[in-house]
Image (cartoon, rainbow, N blue to C red; front, side):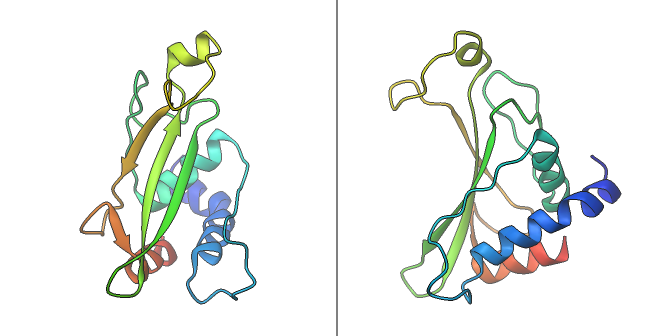
Length: 134
């Protein structure tokens, strides 16, 4: 996906994700949201947020079958919150053998650094600003 197609076709999904993560959302909002899509959706988000990833056994920046982007929200000790991004994907051998993914045979988990953040856990205001600017 290039920048133009990512923005044209992925901005609604990114906007929905930012709304779900927004600390100003109503107290009645779900504590967990799950979105299903295609590999192209992952590529659009990767392009807009300028993410790079490398999952075990795969080429860099591939959106493997069944891959997931996980946005975790943490309450920070001093107040406020931060976001950590993870990419999960079964390895090629796990997919070829149809291995059951368990704690003993986990998928590849890749922490993602969001460009513009100083650490893997990005302060929520910074994350929201970067997402809105994308």
